[in-house]
Image (cartoon, rainbow, N blue to C red; front, side, top):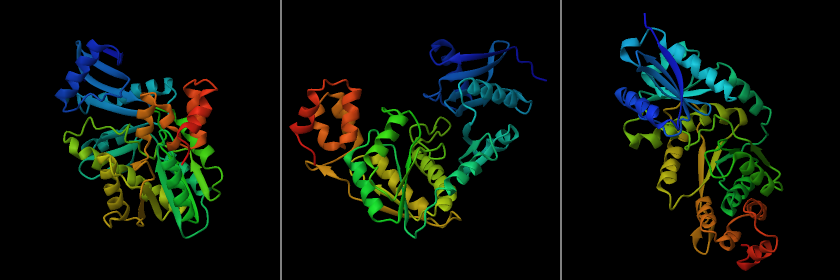
Length: 354
């Protein structure tokens, strides 16, 4: 029987103890995930024998010493992590783990959602939460044979995003727009959601969904247990798209997914290629979904992108932002940046709107 002498919580700011955690993780072939904010550490005679961390509602960096596996240590560790998460207001928890650990987490009360065979699984601490979410979505199903979907971060919402939404809505009986629900972006989720709704309020065949944890953010997708980093993008795409194709699309009758072409960002371009494959491949036993890629909206021969807007803001080149964003986004930026009222007309008129 094991004897745990101490159980402690370690903040990310405690560099000395975090270094010891990182060393223990390396001994277990894991990396220290940079987004974990707090760890639970179990020690035996001052030596770390188990640890696990929290990144919001995601449990990460779980490791147990070989000598203590199968002795209930994992259950104790997960229980403490759940208690810590509840203290921070998170009761719905997720864990990404290697395929060989699936049974261990199932024994701790987690249910498998989707998997990348032989590599990883996504699990949550509920057997019914996804079902309840899908029931909520089903109530928002609309009639029609051309039902499209867009998933976006909108960090912030630009004229490029608006062009994509207008095109998709004009070519569909109904359009479902899902916002990525996380705050790893520069602009908070609630503000991004409000900007999307404000700019699209005149599009009548559109439902804007306030995201869910079943739309997987690339920003929060963990890779600490994937040694071949070239596989990370593929694993993220497969998990994200399988969730969408298996669960979300069927309840809403979605037959198309609409994206903008990506001429500049290789990561997004790679994701679009993965998206096309996993939406249609017969290796998944679910109805295929058509991927529609449209050319990006440009201004002065440059594709409009949220990253460009963020860079202009960082450089305080506010006048150049105006042609790239809807008036609603521009007004919000002016308020956020605390610009003087007399500056607003100058920003709006100096370069004009497209």
